[in-house]
Image (cartoon, rainbow, N blue to C red; front, side):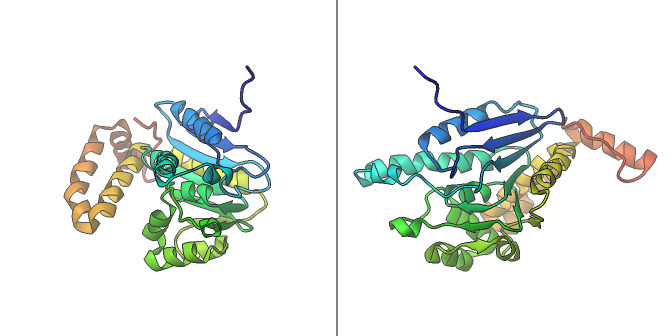
Length: 262
């Protein structure tokens, strides 16, 4: 029995940065085989991972979902099983307890965009463009993209994005506060790796705490976050990084601390 082709690669750097590459060319379409390989790659992340960069090889980030998957569903009940499975991928990425960075070097449609907005930081090349185009098959996005886009850009923008099915430039989505940074096309991959590497080298336990505070904010706004923030911050006194950085600041000045993720 032949092994299925490798559609993903996982590179673990000594710094604790994990680089997950999707290479399911030519169009990096979502398939169940790709989903299984992405799950397997996430399973292989070391326990001491300090940041994750998700990037894509090929001419596009992704042209969308293999539509034959939708054609194969014979009932609403069967379709819901598929959609529940699809939703687990961005949910799993969103739940990771370290910084996650999505690098979009070109056209990024449907499932890939839904993974992007599940990440903490979205970096985009100047030539990149984005869309949720499920309307062309009479569907609405199923992997959390609509609601995660609304969390970043507002409900009105999310309705426009999904209902028009248009493609939006990296610059437009930066204005909407969806894309965090637009970087030059030349050298984009190296710049994305460097950015993610800086996060991995930082106080990643504190970054995880920041994510937890913002999860509470998403659930109940400032009052809900306020109920939890002091306990979350106080727990950082259990970390080597906080104690070492405080000593470094007092002894050597600002910006000289190094962090280990412990």
